[in-house]
Amino acid sequence: MTIVDKSFMPGAAPLIDPFGRAVTYIRVSVTDRCDFRCVYCMSEDMTFLPKRDLLTLEELDRLCSAFVGLGTRKIRVTGGEPLVRRGIMTLFQSLSRHLESGALEELTVTTNGSQLAKYARELFACGVRRINVSLDTLDAVKFRAITRWGDLSKVMEGLDAAQAAGLEIKINVVALKGVNDEEFPRLIEWAHGRGMDLTFIEVMPLGDVEAARVDQYLPLSDVRKSLSERYSLEAIDYQTGGPARYARVKETGGRVGFITPMTHNFCESCNRVRVTCTGTLYMCLGQEDAVDLRAPLRSSESDGPLEDAIRGAISRKPKGHDFMIDRTTKTPAVGRHMSVTGG
Ligand code: SAM
Ligand code: SF4
Image (tube, rainbow, N blue to C red; front, side):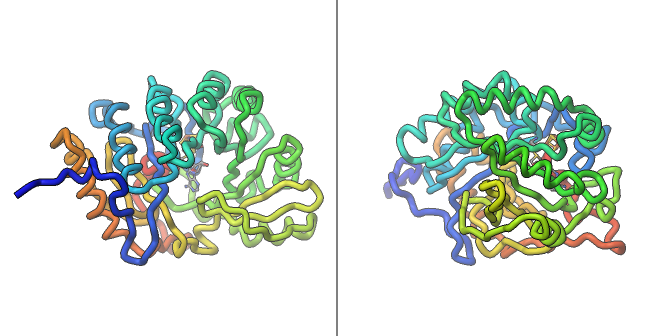
């Protein structure tokens, strides 16, 4: 009998989950570490994984490349803070070959912006064209309070460098009740004034943090309502392959997005899965079920076992999550922090 190694077969069958959704987008967390400690994401004294548990950059490249071979069109590198991982540019450099071949449509990154001044040009040179930068406030004191360790001026330098390098930027703002809600119009006008899109995100109950989620949580339905009292918001069907729904703000001409995992479940159109820095594949951000890809990756030089594990995982992708934040729910819906699974 001839054993055929599927990893060498061009056009291998794409990844389709049990609900008929094609999985074409992976988010890869390259580290669980970060130079910030955002109050909604981490506790102040986080314990991080020992370095030996992490996939090497070569292994991350092999893993991403196996996904590309199975029809992945978009890779988002995330974390933790992806740009604090030592040598991270070598991963971008090696993955850029898939952009050059046309196998991959987009290689992108979500970052807190602290290292952008250093890396923006290199990212652009590796074929990255659009990036997401998380920034919840323009007030330096508030920024320090939210991120605990962050320095707003560094992020601003990073944004300048990124735009100078030619990168398109989308600003991600986590909506935090009583913290940054007063500032939304200012944030929108600032972002649009610089030609950047801005997306609001509802805080999700991921991992234990010191603050009570119910105190942080601000439904975006309320945000949208109050923004529409001030601006004309016109729903548009702009898509970036992610879960945001967009509107155009007539007064600024810019786009504002809403990611509403809590008030409006977006699972029906989910096209993505997440891989952690240890090679654990989570089929859904809001569920515990996961598949280890590190063992099959390390078990063989051929990608066959890895691809079989990926296919097996996709055949178990759940229909959706069931997050809930209320006064009676004391424990997080999912025990792992966002910095583990990757945002
Ligand atoms: N460090 C990078 C950054 O902050 O952009 C990438 C990783 S971070 C985990 C990705 C995104 O997740 C950020 O936009 C962050 O604001 C968001 N995030 C973190 N914890 C969250 C939570 N509990 N609910 C909603 N969004 C969260
Ligand atoms: Fe770090 Fe990003 Fe989490 Fe903030 S949201 S602590 S920047 S990983």
